Each structure stands twice: as C-alpha cells, then as structure tokens.
Image 1: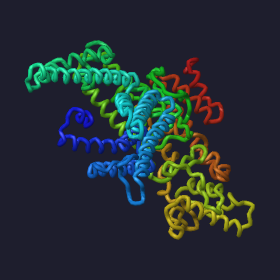
Image 2: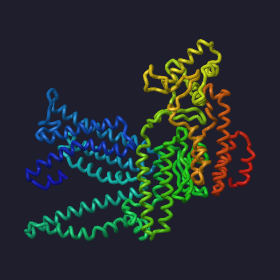
Image 3: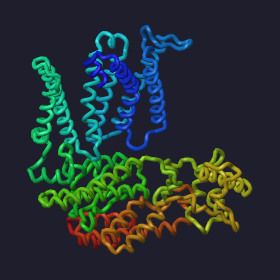
Image 4: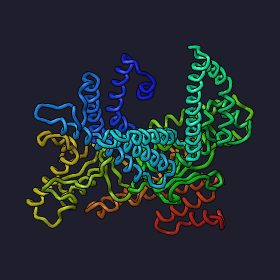
Length: 624
C-alpha cells in the first residue's frame, strides 16, 4: 500500500513516513514469511530449533527495520553510499544482510518441504502444503530479485510481479487451513477469491481512471464518480457475489440447501456438507497418531469411509462406537499404530472425541436431506458439530506434545515401556546388563505390593553364578535399574523407585504412571458394570485393543519362569471371556461380522478349539 500511494503523490511530508513504512515492512517480510511457513507446516507445537530460529529472525529483521526507520539516510545495500560498521566495510555488511534474508527464505521452503514429505497420502494436506510451498517459493524468489544487486536496479518489476503472484497463491493455502475442509471446497474458494480479486482490481482501476477523467472534463474537485459507484456497489454486491458463487460452483444443491447453509451461519464460499469433512478428518487423525489406517462402518457393517489400509480384524485396532446422543451410527476403527503398541489413555480420550465429532457429522448429514426446511433445529445441530470440531482441533494441536507424566508400561504381550513418549531401550546402567535389569523390573512389576526377595531374583536371573558374585551382580543391576527409573535424581538420592522393607524389594507404585494391565482390568470391569449397551461395548473394545498377546511374553528370564504362568493364564482367560461377551453384544445389534471376529480371536487367544466358539460361529452361519 505504501508503494502504491508513493506512486500517486509528490508531497514530501507524505512520502517520508511512507518510505519508512515501506522499508520497515520490507525488512520484516522475511521473518513474517518464515512465521507463516511454520504456521502452515507445523501441526502442534514448534520444535526448539524452529522456535529459536523464528525468534532470532524476528530480532534480526526488527533491528534492521528500526535502523531503516531512525536512520533513513543509511542504506543497507551493497553499492555506495551504504551503511558500515567499524571494521566491517559497507559492502560486506550489505552482502551479509542479503545472505541472511536468502537463508531465512530457504529455511521456510525447507520446513514446508519436510512437512510435505510427511503428509503421506492425505490429499487435502498435500494440496495445502503444495500451495504454501508455491506461495513461499515464488514470493521468496520475487523478494530475492527485489533486493539482489543488479535485477533490483535494472528490472524491479520482475520481483514485484512475483510477489504479487505469491499473494494470489496464498489464498488457497489460507482457505485450506480450514479444519477438515475438503480439497474440492478449498479449490472452489481459491478459484472464487482469484476471480473476485481480479474483478475488484479492474473495478478499482476503472473507478480511479473515471474519477480523474471526470475531474479534467467537468473541472469539479469532488468525488462524484466515487460516490455514485459506492452507492451502486452497496446495492449490487450481494446479488453479484451470489451469482458469481453459483457460477463457480459455490452453492452445491438446490435453493433449500442454500438457505439451510445460510441459516446455519456458514459462509457459502467455504461451506460443505458435513459428510464431506469425514475423510479429511480421518486423514488428519491417521497422520497425527501415526495410524496404518482408519475406517467408519454403519450398524450393518458396511464401510462408509476409510483412509489408508483398512484395519480389518487386527486385535491392536481401537474400535469406538459412533454415538450421537442416544443414536447409534456404527463403529469407527482406528489403527493399529505403526509402532504396534496399544493406545494410551490420552490417545483414547482424543480418539473418543474424534468419534463423537464423526458421529455428529454423520447424523447431521442425514438431517440435511430430511430437514432442509427445519432451519431452527438444524442450526442447533450445526452449532454442536462446530463446537466439537473446534474442541477436537484444539486438542489435536497438543496431541504431539511430549507426555511428561512418567512411565507407561505395556506388558500384555512383549514387555515395552515408554517415558514421556520415548521408548525405554536401556534398562540397566553402564556396568549392568540391560536384560537382567529388565527381568528385575518385570519381577517387581508383576509382584506389586507383595514384592520379591533377593534370593528369588538371584535364583532366577543368576542361577549358575556363585553366591558372592551373584549378590554383587544383583546390587549392580539394581543400581542401574534405579538410575533408569529415576533419571533426574543424583546417585545418593536414588532408592525411592525400588524400596527395601522386611527383606523384600518393592516397586514404588508412583513409578508406573500407566500400565496396560491396569487399563485392561478397568475396561473389563467398566464394561461389565455399564448398563448402557453402547457404553459397555466401548469399554470392552478399549480393553480388547490393549491385549497384544500373552502377559510378559518375551521378557528375559522372567517371561519363561513359573512365576508368571498363573497370572498369564488368568489374563488369557479374562481376554477370552471378554471376547465372548463382546460377541454377544454385537450379535444383539445384528453386527454379525464383528461378532464373528470376536469369536475367531477368542479361539486364537485360547489356543484350542473352544466348543462355545464353534457353536457361536455355527449360529452366525456362512456370513461369518
């Protein structure tokens, strides 16, 4: 704007502050470009490197902008006359400033490119990042040409033109930032914005020309043409824009649907039917939680929407009933995770929120057809969906933040553990075997409040070692394990994680923040106690998704011992009972495919042909 006004006036008192505004904006442009690039490229919190580079960029560009404002006669340029520092020639300073801006633009392009590589097969996300990359790339090229010695002096219009093209491309990236916006809707909005921008530009240019012609012809120094044009524009803007939207495909459907979308408070430009947001939502959820795929099926088992690889009957998948108020809409299946670990409680809460949003979207889609004239009722539904959508989007922003809540233990299957989202690979210290330390941890974890005696652990882990050496190895291993469980404490303060009392060692319950065994037991208990069938299925499916295999299956030493067999058999039996109950629940809802999948998994978990499973599959018939 400053450049445009400078071209239209020769008043010195106006040109001076406009020059300052132009310089300040130009110097802050690299930092602003990097900020926009990171906003579009990063889902969640920026890394420390990204945040540090952004802050440093703003400090550098801000300092240069202040210099341009307070010292307008000092040019930060390569050619004379230019700004210089003691010991630093002006030409070197100018080239350093050129290089810094190029480096900032390159960083913006690289981070968007990295995000594009991680987008996978999410079509909406890829289109958005491609548009953002084109915007930043073209804009950065135009900016470099604008300030690079040579082209900036001989052909400044090239750089300005490229920056203008980048501003047009930015419209698509901005529209695509909408939460769960279908790619086709973003394309429609982009097409509309570009055509509208061109029309308005031509209109304003014609208005300025007509105003000047009227001044010269009539000799009247009054904005007559502008005033008349303003009145006409106010009267015609709504019908013209509506007509343009329809021509460009902005209003999809008949007049009733158009009125409905207006009544719900949605902008026709970016409005879309609720079911159009389901696939973009599944794609984003799969990307955020690193899922192999996600799918939605109706109560009869027919698939409605999917992204990635169909989860099928994978036992690590998480199945959540789609329920809008008391209306059962089907099941959404998430996973399994690419890490092959079950879902933590925090992830389940977020995915349950997603299931609530998807169920509400499916229900609203049906009501769009059936209640197009019932505007008041549908407006309430639309507001509820928008609230859930906003809450889900805000929650997903934090989904990738580190979980600073202690140790997560996965023992239903191979023993795995995570601390703050990072897998624990080294259980022992530098001089302690990690396999032995893992066995000690499993021993104490399994025993719980009962604890374990030193002699029991030595006999299991060091059976062929003489007593004195075994005792030394035990204490060394115990020290290494304590270091792993209490990484923030100095050596002399360690010990609270594994306490010694009455000749027995016990694991402090506070060390393990979450375990799949506890969550499994809680899910089974909650599913058995729930009076509502949908709620019961949700709890049972949560417990089902946690069971990866036999309890402490591959744990060194302890996993092959007799100590673990009793609890392993107990948990295996609990899993079989759970699957049988879940099969009956699905059969009551006529979901024969899900019921058969539960029976087949029960047969695999039991490790033998169960008569109840065979009878259940026989009742389901050939469709099972």
